[in-house]
Length: 279
Image 1: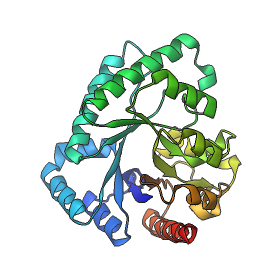
Image 2 (image 1 turned 30 degrees about the vertical axis):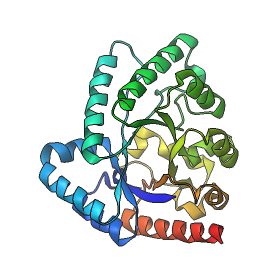
Image 3 (image 1 turned 45 degrees about the vertical axis):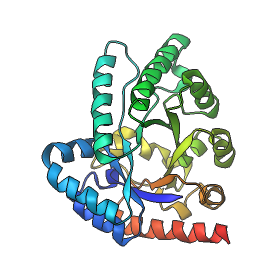
């Protein structure tokens, strides 16, 4: 497994992409997962400097692991705007030489989506997959609460319903655990579609609401319960035994305080863990 950090970690800090590249190299990351809004801003306002940093990134053996954003698949009336956004993301992905775009499968719990609405979601995802495939890009839906991938049965059904080779899974082990499923069993079931991992942890299920988007993106949002990978309720050691030798990126998704300190400790913990399981 290759390890990447997420630029969303620094969403509330004044830090340049060049600083992030230097930090990633210093701590032996393999790549950087770039938040879509960051990518667009860099393209619009710092394109020349960004291209210099992309060259440095490549020279140091790193890459942009994934472009993470959100494509609205819910409404038919607004889907033209979604297609325009998808075109922009594909253009950014090609500029960044990245082969994966992450999105969510809607913004409603799977049990609240009726058959007609679900069929619309599936149709829209298929269209987006077709667009991505034409440019050699995979579209990854993340296992996440309040989407069509919030439970294993719905996730597997969605993959079969869309039935497109460009559709893949960004497997968030914490959110799978949150759904009540076993992370290892879920990984085995989703293995044919998994193409990226999100790695984060929580001290107790009582604190899971801290990862709700409205809280995570708020500068003054609650951060209680966010803990390093080795200290939370999800046991990552058996997970590492399964994924350490895979060729995908695992992004450390840290939303809490002291990001540089935590990321430096997390990547070291993961490297040591992967070495142990290989012995």
